[in-house]
Image 1 (cartoon, rainbow, N blue to C red):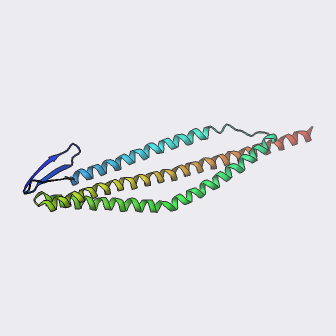
Image 2: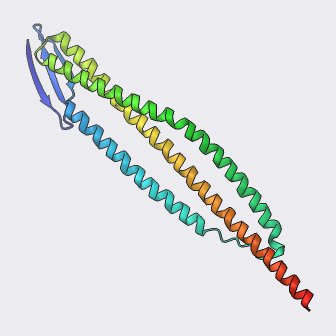
Length: 211
């Protein structure tokens, strides 16, 4: 039985086992260190994406907060003020409900991401162990190593997808919190406008009485 190996540009190794009858069985032998480097790379990549998303969301909130150009100053504006006040309160209640649901769902996303990561580690270790056996083994070992290498690849893919879904869900929660803060700030602005209108009405009434 003859064995030879080649290394590809992505760090994986291809081992070919030639049997007595001359049949070649090729499989991908993943390097455990390479798999771990890929995992670290994707983790760092996800962190950078989350940071950029956070800055983007903060920029949106700042833009939205400065875009509230509508100002209510007189008694004639009271109806419009009250209408917007009701709409903002309804929006706020809806956002709080969505936030509550999203926060309740978060542990599930975290658990699935953790389980997928553990499965990927186990599959990578099993694939590496089997690859070591196949290097000095027979055709059967090579076939087993091929199956485990494929499983390790699929588990790593599932882990990345689970982490991506978790990241998206965390971003959703962040957006809800920022939108809630924006709505709360608007309610405070509307309350101040109400006070301003009421104060103006009182001042105008006093002037009329004095006259």
